[in-house]
Image 1 (cartoon, rainbow, N blue to C red):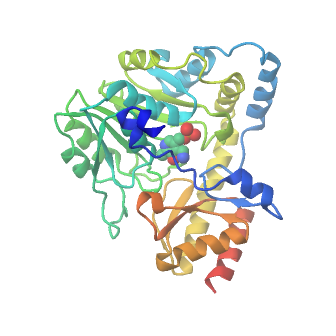
Image 2 (image 1 turned 135 degrees about the horizontal axis):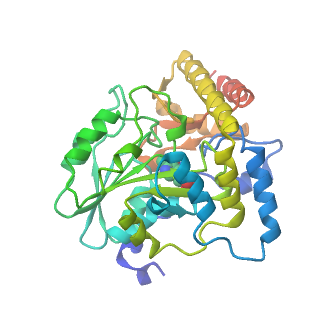
Length: 367
Ligand code: PMP
């Protein structure tokens, strides 16, 4: 059937989620330690869960196609207008739709080597040509991070879209607010710049700045965010993009009317109202991220600097063996071969107990 698909899809390989987690869970003798998908182990706000359950009472009717209440809460919290927001079934859906809407055959989409895998999928699915800018070298202070000069240099008259993530997955690296402003100033006004801020809430680096405040002055800027990470609602699939109202209006042409379901809308809104839960979750992640990277480094492993809830760790020629041996012990990490990083594994920062179990298993495996 591949030959029947449109040209972009023909060359496409489906997104690789790493493992068949359902099959692994079914076969596991004891609970798995799942550190492969950058989920938030501290869990969602109990108020968000209650709101989702309450929303199930209305399961026989369609959800609000405009997501008005959630958008109002987002707009108030972020200091934007409702017309600046488009909701997605996760931010993944929106990342795909930006390319579907703004790029096509003959057009180019620019992303960074080691940028999040969905950018390449989005470009290819739209039939556009992907141009990958080289990343910063592994020895850089931001190993394999986005090289904004290289990204700028990869833009041609055919470029319609640039995707970049701050911080980036899978590297965990980030770039400074000042560097991004300089980059944006050099991007032609007709090129849409999509900044993926899926992990923005986790950041505490003083040189980091969200691209949000630049939206008001840069109509070609888009920022995507998600409830999957800091808000720990990955299973309910809610993301959003902030953009110029005219850009949002075009995106609305392809958005499936009921793309965000009612429990998702309700949970996301309730989660925004539970600032204390979010703050506690972010504190716990920060503390555990620091502790885990320290523990891994003390074992002689190279750990990329990270402002997220995961760490990119180099295991060299032991990588495949370590991954398999950990899997045999019920510990799931993310192999990085698909990114051309076959000597690295990506590790989600767990709870204190999760990380202790990971380190104990790792010590057995590395012994
Ligand atoms: N952007 C980045 C950088 C991610 O890592 C992820 C999830 N792994 C997403 C977007 C998509 O997340 P979601 O669809 O759950 O919002």
